Length: 362
Image (spheres, one colour):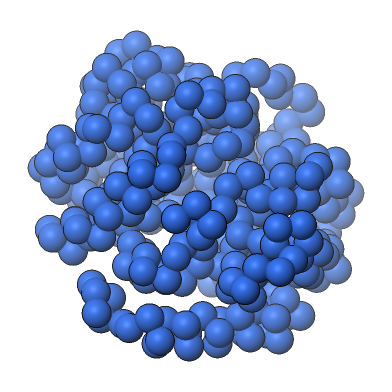
């Protein structure tokens, strides 16, 4: 037994049931639970792991504020406001000049929304305006102690601004979930114990500890990648501290894990949500699945300026609802029925194999 209270046999039973549900219910009848709005690819940091390469790409033909409002109207008309939940991201979403105009419009339309941010721009005034705009949840990035965080994000002076931003959010006492996300890499893995004490002292609801991924800008920084012993250390760290304090420590949604870790480091079993629960509208109107997935022409499902999101959701996203990845090293893997090729954002579409398979590694 372990901190989930579930035996390996019970976990495998659950995973088989989830696999059957994915194949027989979810793929034929997907449900849009989370819709990401990439408001901008502008960012005031230049992180060494950025999957979207923010700061290295120009923002061409971005949606106007009125177009974003039209998207909100369309989603409300075609999907309602209970589902999907709006997830606001970037770049740094607060850099959009009409951020509050757009999000107040979403609140007035009846949507629940959350945001991912680097936190550097959240002054007491901004925190108050986020409350007034109806923000429900927020995840703020803290990627190490001061020196490491600022090196990793290539942003001198950002650590204090980020920590102040978190405290300003908490001082409002108005948000359902204030979370900190930490990307673990070779340079900050030894700082986890000190970071844990800092996070406990903040009073946040959860601390999400995730591994650096071999995508985006991180592909140019291979020295930051973790090894087998590092992954085991991180997952064991999460298991140990997960319910030790009122602040939950958890792993992210990425990657199918060995059975000893499934349900031990997060409150759910692995399931890549791309194209079955999750869709995104990019800053230029392109429609895709998870925003961390490689930006390839064949993975653009349409554009909101030309296509109905409802029609694209119902008739597109075919690769995410199929077994096209059952090939190469995944073809004969006995765990394929559980992971279906693992996360789409770490799939190598050129070699047709995963960039990273933690089940195999561990």
